[in-house]
Amino acid sequence: MRIGLIGYGNISRTLMKLLSDELAAPLSSLTVLSLPEFAETTRQQLAEEGKKVAGELTVVDNGEEFLRASFDLVIECAGHSAVSAYVPEFLSRGTDTIIVSIGALADQELETRLRKAAETGGGQIILPAGAIGGVDILSALRPTGLTSVTYRGRKPPVAWSGTPAEDILDLPNVKEAVVFFKGNARDAAQQYPKNANVAATLALAGLGFEATKVELVADPQAPGNVHEYHVESPVANYRIEIENKPSAGNAKTSVTTVYSVLRAVMNRIQPVVI
Image (cartoon, rainbow, N blue to C red; front, side, top):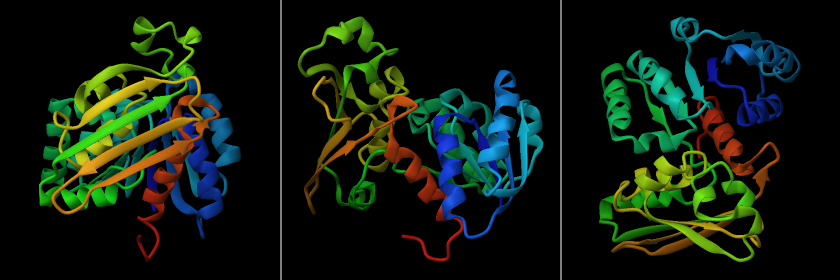
């Protein structure tokens, strides 16, 4: 399998380590698109971390060069702008693509572009569950006529640094849990693009961006990144709460996110998919 990887940050590097343990045999090739200023560092890291992952390792720092390459699978790990810049082209050529920055689809125009490219070219948009569980049952219940989907994201104040929450709260001095955002999944994903991918995932699996209710909370007592949501439908009601450990390299990201991406990759390789 030939894989193209967009970005080589915390998620991508951890994914390399996991793939080196999980793959029964190396991939035929792995090509990483890096920012020019990080390309040499990425080459050095990949030479060490990716040697068990693929027989051929390449790092490119030019987007046009990356777009000219042919892959069996593309994995986006570089943020909303990367989804817009690269994913539609690969989908239109029939290349299945895993999108990690799922919140990018809160942009209606971009979501339309992606869906049209996939329908036209035959490439499949693969959206891993990320930091949340139970997405399978939520998606399964959608045809029954979902009544409500309500999500609450609770993280330590430091995880909200660098977001609009800084303009609402004095984050270093928050002493108790504070709800600083109430709205729908579209607004949450657009205003908090690095924190609200879970809200976008639930919206896409269930009632949509406008109808999915969201609360975001800064809580100094939170044991990690806590994701909880409640679903009501004519067939079944359920509630899920997951306490995720924050990634060592990025407090905004839950460790389980990269394992979800690993699962999506292995599902393209293994003979049995669960």
